[in-house]
Image 1 (cartoon, rainbow, N blue to C red):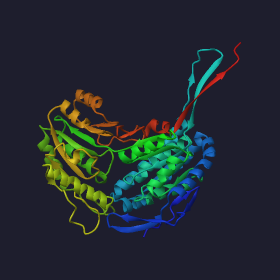
Image 2: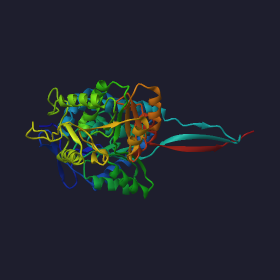
Image 3: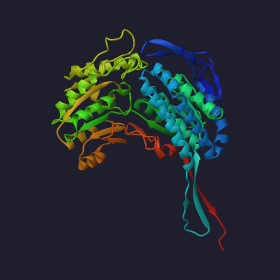
Image 4: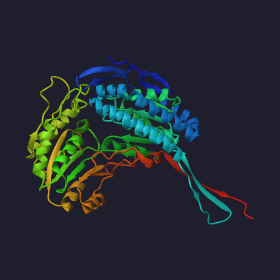
Length: 483
């Protein structure tokens, strides 16, 4: 049993149950059993949390940047100390292998540390005047109370990606995690309280997504909505924010091309491709999902990918040596099944995997899958897959692959492997993606901006841009006496 209380709503520094007494069962995807029944709130609890955040806002905003930074740094330090414990909770509720879960908690710690330092760099400007009787300057001002919504695939890291810059800027927050993965997130908020984040500055509402979002959109206390999730829901939130011209930050879906040119080592790139594709079962917004391989090396690459995929160890994420855990819920597993079946109907060939794993009597385990001969009409190449399914597609030349890679409404990430400088520049300039990894399958870094183009979102997280997303610029003009 987990030593975690079921009262995991955090409002104004107090853990509490839902007003109605509603609860929600958190399921272990490796066992299909209930880990814990937790409090499950809605619009009323969200309204109280927003009120608490507004009440806490003036004192937190007026705390100097060094004071806010010290609190965030303590959060980072404590997360590192408790990473093994929190990671175990994350694996139990989400399914990813323990090593991946531990890495996620440590990445969240890095996010808090980065923005602790960035809090001290919310600079204004002195602007040269055109008239001697005036002086001009700008100040940075926190946006206000923020409503944050994050998904289930990286519940700790994605929550920290919103909390850390918002708090660094002087904002207060009401946050909603995915209902399926609230337990590790509750541990993050416990750490924040223990590290000295004042009551009301960071509030947690586990509850009905439509009710929580409705209160964020309708309540004028909430000045910004920051959302990570599907493009469809992002569009709905953007429409809802329009009525009050509420600020909105959106990190949405992706369909990342992984492009391999003939001068790259196909066997080495195959290792990177397998690691990148099947991390967290492909349930990653920036996961490579369309593998374009030059025809001169396609056969060698494909053979290496299939061999390495077949060696991956599937199992409960808590077991030693497991590289691939279960998918996070039955619906996600069925989605993977449907994508493969559709690809087969369209003429694709399954090279390995392609079905629910027969190794396990229980749990949402799907075999890591590699396909080729996948036509453009297959859903796998049209919809965001979010599944452990790797389609291999041959291409002939640079212009052709740029056109194919950009032929999607998404534009979050793209990956290119080449040793040619000219190819590097042409791909960097030609690909329509907010994040481009060239000979780098893991480009995410706390000091660099993260976000997409087209229907993959608006705004940027992380980097110095991540702090700017929670600040307003105030321009001040002062008339002075001039002798």
